[in-house]
Image: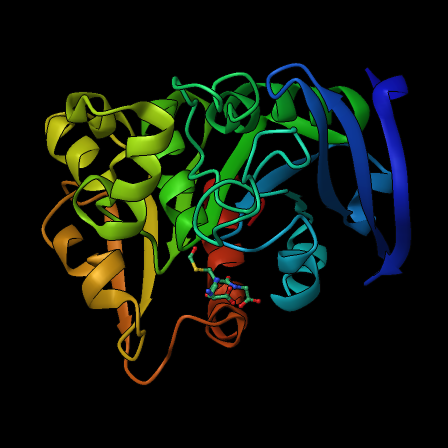
Length: 282
Ligand SMILES: N[C@@H](CCC(=O)N[C@@H](CSC=O)C(=O)NCC(=O)O)C(=O)O
């Protein structure tokens, strides 16, 4: 599988290295890109891995450049992997017309509707193809994985993690889109990617999934939300997580913080420590 990887750039970082790759994706039927941080501990063996899913308009570079997570990943001995937020240059008409649909806006679903269904298969890509590729190509432990994300990517992290609980030791999110089947960004994307049968949207809705799994054992989850986030009331609805998760979910509110990477950078250390604890490296 390594032969499938084309390196785009590489930099030394906190004693390890950060690199960006492109590969031919079977799930998305075209090229996909991701960034990876390998901490210094990979010199002596395999390390646990935290996947990070970014939000609308972001790429595989955004988290690695803006969140400041490498310092903590080096400390705990965690690899970080950040995929792009959608397939790109697929030839789908108007793929780049809207900032909240198409390029940079996959919503981490497996699209069922034309013309999106051949390429926009990000749920399968994130849950299955990318972890298999990463475990086969880098010194990471594919049995020791966690998932984190922001906004649209927070929605991706929680929904993928809830639906594939056995694959992830812990889940976390910053300002996630919590109920996309009932809020405007999600309704627009789901209508286009998944069609008009709203029953199918619930598979990609964190609040709906948590309510459906009330009696099940869930992976530990940490969600941080800024009280000054301009998207909170209309798009995120993080308050709807209150009381859900049966004790597995810790929801923290931070007055004055907005939706930006300044918010993420302020609390990414807590998320890395949370995942390190559940990945068994503390
Ligand atoms: N329309 C605006 C805003 C886009 C935006 O705020 N994107 C967020 C994620 S929103 C939910 O998924 C983001 O992470 N942006 C990247 C950043 O560096 O802040 C626009 O097009 O700019």
